[in-house]
Image (cartoon, rainbow, N blue to C red; front, side):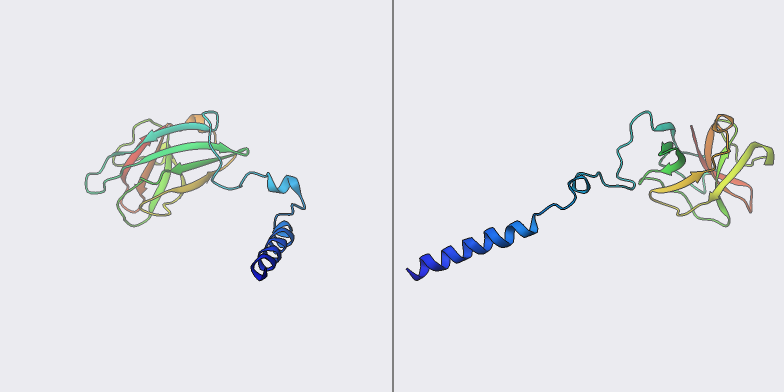
Length: 154
């Protein structure tokens, strides 16, 4: 008998308190998709992509890069497998040709940003006023010594 009363009171507690924890005040918020980089990209979102190749053998570079359009903004992304050597003043540049030589001329590229990390996924915002039709490759370049570590044709 005592066991039956105990089981009944546990059941009542679960029903009463369990329902409080599952109340949805704003149903649309519960159905909202997560924001941020977890958005699945479709082919329409990827504007260009390529795989890095080495230029300077002492500074190997590998991995994949892509330019995406997300919510009206363009970004250059390196995938998790990206890897390059370290050096002074290493920059991410967009180059006018689909291949990039060891040493580059000033009129052939624009600097997007300093390299964030020598490995792993990273993302760089591309200014709205840049015409991407003018650029055929992304490169990892050492400004101090004018040495291209590697590039990916886009």
